[in-house]
Amino acid sequence: MRARSLPEIASTREACALLGLTGPAEGEALTAAFRIAIKAARPEAAGGSEARFRRTIAAWRLIQSQTAPLALEAPLV
Image (cartoon, rainbow, N blue to C red; front, side, top):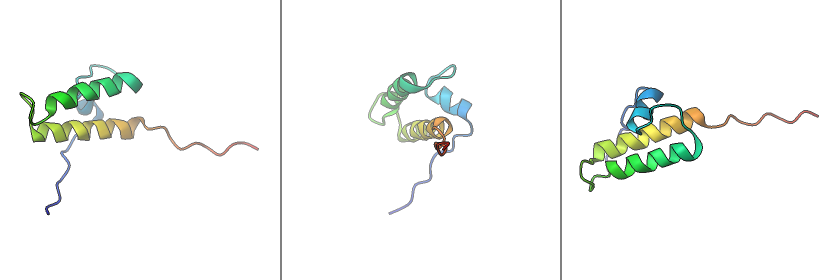
């Protein structure tokens, strides 16, 4: 079995554009944008392709990695 390389997404701006976002989004708005984009990108959908599907997932992962909350600091005693 061959290892697949992840599609390269150069920036958060490119990732947001791929998800159809025109400005900052988080939470439910971000999830909704991803769901719409991933449905349209599915290879069996009209206009979709495997490459577009993989790039959409890569875009989602990049945005998630950029917006993930940082580890909690230790409580002050």
